[in-house]
Length: 430
Ligand code: ACO
Image (tube, rainbow, N blue to C red):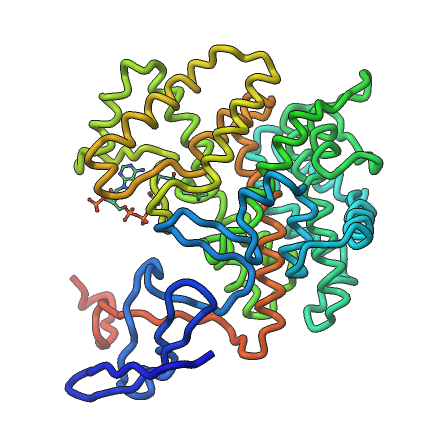
């Protein structure tokens, strides 16, 4: 869609730039011809004002606190649907009929096992390896196992690769966990639903019967829905950039996992839980609020603030409700971490600093408490995020591959280093 023309003046020269309108949300100024017309680039570190693509998948209104997958509000999807329904929606653009859903569930389920030689791959890691390190390696290694789904020009191969990744992520994630605690791997059991199967692979042992708790399974499934996509965030942009060179989808998703690992992104729930533990008791909260506000102190309230949401993160509200459900189900009446979290949230929401900067709790503020109560160690939190986000990465990657205007991604720079100079031999230096 190309609606209007905007005129800007650069170096006293008037340049006309096209303005493109989306269906909702801010319009964009098309600057793709700017360099040709003016000899200048735009400067936007962190891409805070730059749209890198057109997309039909996910929409966020950060000021209003709205998140839509293919037009559907996250609250409705989390309340009424399951994770595989969300996967179908993100991949195909529409909610499935009952027959389509049954077929999709069947196709995903058929791919849950990993190549048996993958087990040997695991043996190469130290037992204390971070499971995210294992995930980066093993997901990347899938391209060495499934040669029949790495040709990105073939839509059929792209779809098989997508199914494989959605299906195998829980298996690999559970294997990474089992390996770290020295327990045998538990094979998938395909008569269980996606999330129950994952819980069983994580927590069952061969010497005992394991019954999946349906309340916990539903709660985790909802957490997966909340994390499934979030438009052009750092890891998704990484997947798109890696994919823009024509790299195979397994390698691209491995790149996304690597990016997600950082504490400012997927690692924030681990960091938020660590912070709540460090605070320890509600009476110490004011001290940490003061640290967060101190410009000379690098401390930040983890689980607070978001690049896009300048309002309550809609996922945080659902997450908070899910936390209470899980703690009730597990009979955890008094969780000191939850006490600190609730109190901290109340204080921060009224504090001038946080109000003025529009810093609200994000999804990670409560997810750590919930996952910990379910029995996951903190090192697995980001792995669960990666598992859920895989479908978003794949949907965005597919959209990019199918876009005829797609080109290799190549940002420009403002060079501030030394201008050209002559090489001098060692004897004349210093
Ligand atoms: N605690 C205290 N101050 C904060 C916080 C925080 N959590 N977040 C932002 N600020 C302050 C900054 O110091 C800055 O202040 P200034 O304008 O006086 O310099 C201002 O708010 C803007 O912060 P930026 O870092 O410029 O905002 P940006 O949009 O780049 O960062 C981010 C967003 C990285 C999420 C940031 O809010 C943060 O570090 N939060 C804590 C980590 C976290 O929870 N990450 C999870 C993100 S959600 C996700 O990935 C699923």
